[in-house]
Length: 86
Image (cartoon, rainbow, N blue to C red; front, top):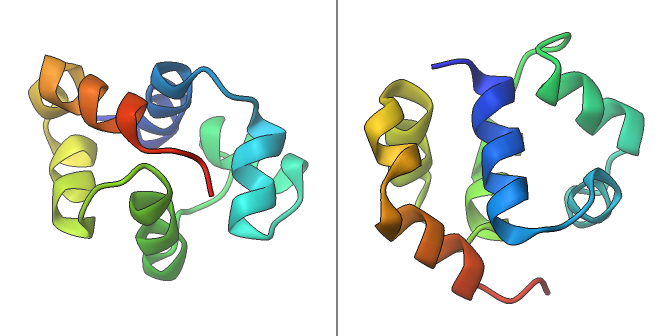
């Protein structure tokens, strides 16, 4: 699965902007946009923060990145939508 597409889909599930995700991750919006556009590589440290942001364990995010069925299942959507942005 395309990492950028996974990040975009998770963000769309939560109905938030790139700016909101970038703010939480403490990076520039343009940096986050490059992740969604696959113009830069996702580091493990950033992936851990992204998983936390979406209320999931890093292992589950890794499954979403590897297997599309995990990303597109109703459980993932409910999980992401239920986690408040802190």
